[in-house]
Image 1 (tube, rainbow, N blue to C red):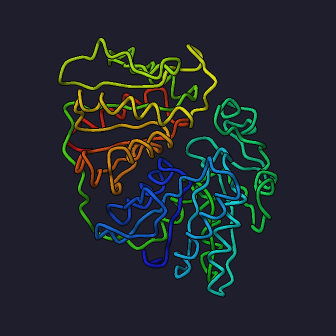
Image 2 (image 1 turned 60 degrees about the vertical axis):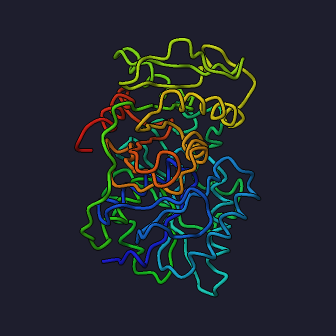
Length: 378
């Protein structure tokens, strides 16, 4: 069995960091998520994930960030690098930077890439990534306004921004991913690059630690914040609206919320950016994030939520920064793609938080998030 001290974990955005933290939490209890790549372990947690928030960075910048993180993790034997299962972001530059940093100590590191996540219908065959049997660059992710997959060929994507110094592995089942991990665990130094499926396979080889994580109290006034405009997130919010939950919308044309109908002091409320289909503007989702969070700040003071659900990695990062959070303490995953955490530090210290990526999850995912925030046993 692996010891937690053997393993370092790094992710390219905050919801991804929480996703993989939740995979490891089943074995080690609470897993800390560092909001920034500062290399600090805090809060007395023995196992932590470093968030680099580098998915939307230029390749050179992403490579520099990951190289620095690699130097911090060089004392580990195993490093898990979370990459997007939709092959978005400068994956090659990130892997090159990470390996350069790790190798500065003189050790020889290998890299195994397996981005499949069969539990959410994303598989790899013949070096090509699929979602529900469709190449990843031809499905729903091709409509991602921020970072659509440049190709479904895994090596092609890696070599667009990096050298491709890695072994790429196919996987169509969780058993395949477990076999990949087990086949390479004996190597002296190895980077496993993948998503939820590979994280779970690696977590299965960690020794268990019996800990009772702090979960935060159930919320009476939870707020769901959806900054993603991915079609799947839009449908999930609309499903919650049909369930009777009120929605406040941020209009990019005016850079403000319509707050004339803020409901009473209890019950869940959802805030979102106006979908492209309703009122598109020229701003990218990343450009919208700062004014969205700025406009959200007085709304948070007015509504005073006691629990947060967040959809979208950029949204989660900027919102946690705005609230002054120091870290997240992830203790559970739900329905494969929802991570449950406790906020540490800032104005919502000790409150419960759940999050998910914008491109994943069933139609009722937002409803599930509200339930997780409000139930006693989460």
